[in-house]
Length: 306
Image (cartoon, rainbow, N blue to C red; front, side):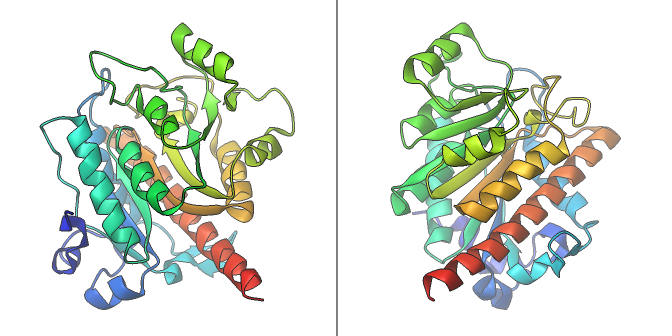
């Protein structure tokens, strides 16, 4: 098993999320680990997702550590930043295997992994690692695209097929979908999959999404789920999507009622000032979601232990 991302001697020299300490002492005390994965191999339109992890981490230094909604300093949850998982150029399956090994090594140390991509294919490695420890896992995907093709451009492992491969591991619920091909639509209908197209069909869609999930959840957020007018710097932008408050309302509900064991944010393609705006937005989303997971996981543990 590779342990490159778990080498404590490397962590303290790398740029860190929100400028937080990643020394040996903080590694031992941390609950969350930011794992940068600057991998980009199968993006077929706007390139640049490989630059997103560094850009998000750089912009995160502007975050206020205090969060008014939670009324606390989220950094107290213990957040460290791993060194990058370097790309494997022999193919996407090999890269997915490397990510699986790295995530497994952090899980063995009791850390909740937060992956920053890179293209969406990286999600599959994290899912495989976490599912090995949580067989009841389900996945919540935020995305403009279904990513349910069985094969695309000669490969079965790519950003366009990632959720088809994820579904071979565990169940998944998809939210924000507004672009898919006829093959994908047939797959959804024939298998009666929990896909919540955007805009929602009713006012209780958040409750319906939460109900579709198992108790243990991994969240994957493709940046193109946001309306492209709000966050245009993505690999495959789509108009007509949800905004910050709609996405955060669902994340809040899931964090409160389910055990979220990890998440990723992928597919930002930052360029220029708009790229910085997108990177900061996703840094803020990352930080707040960590805060919610920490608060509600502690409450859950307290309730289980009486």
